[in-house]
Image (cartoon, rainbow, N blue to C red; front, side, top):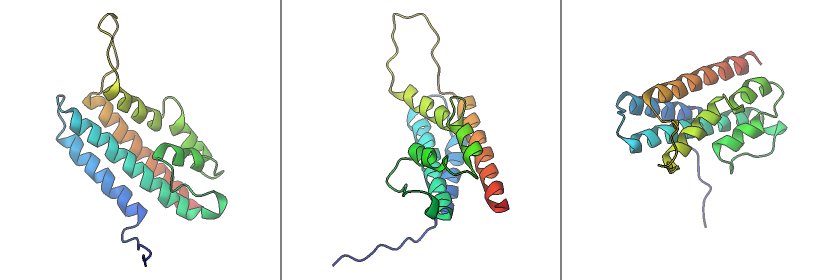
Length: 149
């Protein structure tokens, strides 16, 4: 008989852990290491996912389960909450955090057309610092809003 698994670490703690990991990766990041750049983005995604789960725990009765969704769709679902709609929707917009992460990920998997004479967007340290700063500001705003509610 299988027993129910017991969660040993809370989502809030996991979110903070992945944020710490992404900060450590960013400190050691150099321009040539695409694996670490991708690892940084994955750490931010995991942190966002666990943060979404933590927020969902506070609003379980207002939403359908989000546990089987990826981080982006979790935030789409959470944007339906009236108390957090304005904060989350801003980060889902084209200039928001989620789109910035998705764009950065897509850069790793695109094939540049050598025949075109255009500049293509790159993943540089400035962009990763921007992602981290936007995420910290987003997380802080969410926490302040939730503490006031």
